[in-house]
Length: 454
Image (cartoon, rainbow, N blue to C red; front, side, top):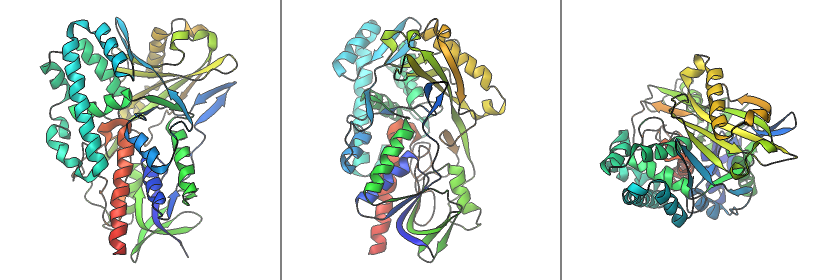
């Protein structure tokens, strides 16, 4: 005996929850099936620290803001507010403002000799980003019309455009540091990808308690308010049962007309491949290439300079010590009883985990923090390394034949009414890609459900 639903969501990551919320609001019965993860924050020696710190970008005018309007989530619900951020250059700290006038004045201050070329650069990216948003909001399936503009396979990469405009290496370093910090993409960045990532971060960087895990909790509550269910048990097996899909957990059996995968791509494919049934299209290779590494510090409040207390800081590493050349992302937690949690995050190639080089990377990250916050070592009371094993929220490479996309997995990678949602679908679009992926899969599922009714 199974419990019947219209849609089964396997996993509880952001993209699948976006799909679930949109479909549940339209009146379809939805079940999210996942083993609930631990708390997004944890306590250690009197400090509150992040399990997996991350930031939400583009709430004002971006796809997440549109989603909140559509499903009825107030934009200030659980949102701590926009955080200003700085990019650290060898000779300068550049403030990135949400307000266009302030940002332009900051660019004029930092890049006075090339301000006209810098303005042309941002004007071009803004126009491309508007095109992406327009196409994706109208019909995410039409995203393929943008492929000739250079999304696919790195055609017309960002560096070519910057060099063509005669922009200095110093300015290019400023741009690449931001892209590396807020995207899920490895390797050369196309102009289209850069337009989405840079514009999204300029539409606000927001902090939620627990980062993306906190946002997941918000979306789950909204899904439940629409009548959706959350099944706290991981999926063990999926098979076809007549015109429905049968999903088994350790405790029960569920059936649905549509299945949406929202977990590690390898695990998701394994649910079908292990059955030796031809549910999947051809897949030769899917592997996780990058995973997050976080070092958390518990610091006395007196060790954090007043001017940096509310900032997100992107550190550009000119010594070549940090992974992927750029980058550590530093987030200051809220003060509490004279204490403050400081999270330092970078993305680490999988082979670095295998080589056991985590200690060396962590030490290099702490050297970067000392560069930002001189003498902070005198105020550190807790040091804790998190995410030291590769996880499923890294960057994937695949040789799946693309039906559409930008170097990621097509969301229609499986046969029947089965879809895949996640950062691997639109990796080049940064955080916006998580939301766009969920919307695209919701549209595909809606089309399948409507066709079945007919």
